[in-house]
Image (cartoon, rainbow, N blue to C red; front, top):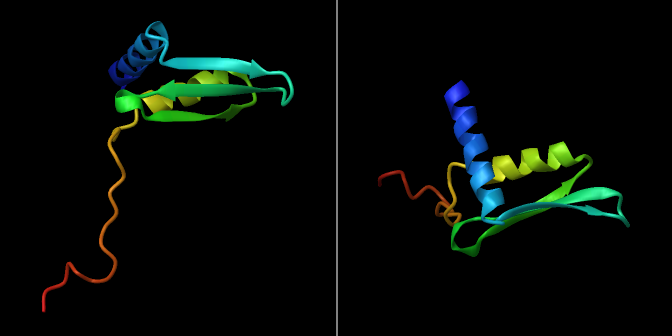
Length: 82
């Protein structure tokens, strides 16, 4: 378990160094805006109340298991045979 969290931290640090992850304070809303640019230009973004919470969201976005496109299953019971 400790090894996985170290790997997650390492991935976040790499994203920070490559300027693909950022956290900025938005004065009008009083909250932090976090943005992560993943592979192939896909972005994740959102709002957080504290800076540490925003970096936690960035870490979660960088370490999601599936970075590809979302595939939907066909509607109906096509998996059942005749």
